[in-house]
Image 1 (cartoon, rainbow, N blue to C red):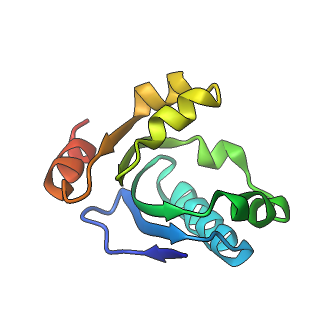
Image 2: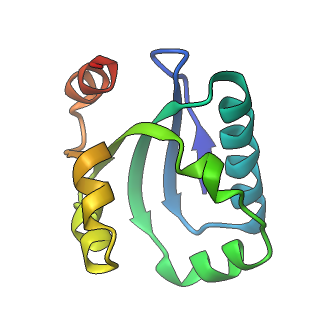
Length: 120
């Protein structure tokens, strides 16, 4: 389930994700990212990720048409989770992007995550 949360700054899209991803979740996230892209051109993402039902992701994404140029316009991604999803990204061949623009934070490290996002 995807839930948008209050962002600590106007440049950052903040959300929590836990459990299953639905088509509606994917469409809403794409809508918010598209709107942020249209407003500012670039943006940050703060994602707090819990347990993920990986089996639900392909079906949710299959029927949604993403404009990847918008999605790749992010400046930084702060990823807070028990599991270090950056290692997962490296396994998918996305390690260079993950290393340059993304940082993993352990649960509860809110201040550190928001401070990192605020740095230029």
